[in-house]
Image (cartoon, rainbow, N blue to C red; front, side, top):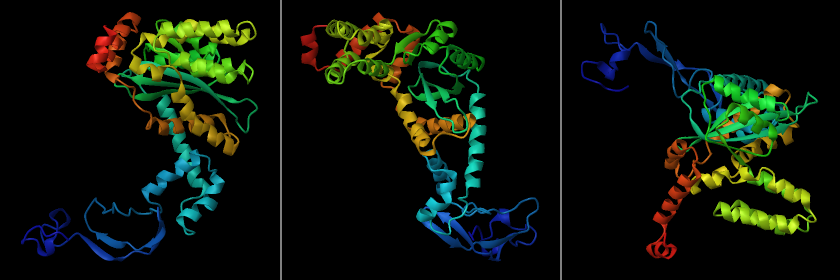
Length: 394
């Protein structure tokens, strides 16, 4: 007990005492029956004191050991992570007692099934959220395919991420689609419109024609950037293995070129070297060539982020890991929920864009190439030592 004054015998807290008799209304009343609690270090037996609470309309509850608690909060947080990483519901009773002790409780498949039901509710709320206060300068899109154990058709998950004005990356949409078709992407974009979202300045994605057709219809003013990583993989796939190392070096020079003119010169050099024998590789590289250079119209600090959709690919590595272990989700809704939860977890680790202070400026300029080039050049000069600035004579 905490002593609060001489007028309160035994240091009774005023809120827990009877004003007329100065007697405690909440007192200890023996011990409760022992129970086992699963902690990170194993399972221990705990005997909590019983409490006699005579207050009207109130009931004392321990925050350290709430009633009916069988697992510590940290263990409860680990369970969904293990499930999402590939541990099946039937494996929990066999695998976790090795870590938490043979007396570990609350680890049945039913407990995990209840968690998936909660996640499905969170996913439904995510799809219904209000987007009127959201503004995304850049968006990344991709379609990821998964196997569904109980269905013949594979699940095509349409994913969209966005960069907000403060540089943070955020999950925008996770939807079920049909082979990345135009109709599927139109449904996603219109759903975002109904939620109150406008249009981004730049959209980054691979060469899937369905999305770009939908963008031209719903977001006609949005600029397009093709994914360099996907494009280079498609080009290398059309070359013999003996030529791929040299072609890969050239392709990396294209991707990381310091200017648009340098990138265009490297593409021309590649085309002149391989057109005669490997026209399909050159055609794959030069298709929609103009949209490979869109990132040059934006600040150089952002190029590493907007040249590819690696932010989606890296996040979905964990999703593919679980698909390999469990041989696919049991239903399409379960697969979408799984993808949503894993992306939501990955969102906490996504790094912000470099130089986020330039994002509002890019929004106002709407990607004006000359303005961005001048602004980027001024930023580069400010970072150069004095002698290098003099040498460049800019």
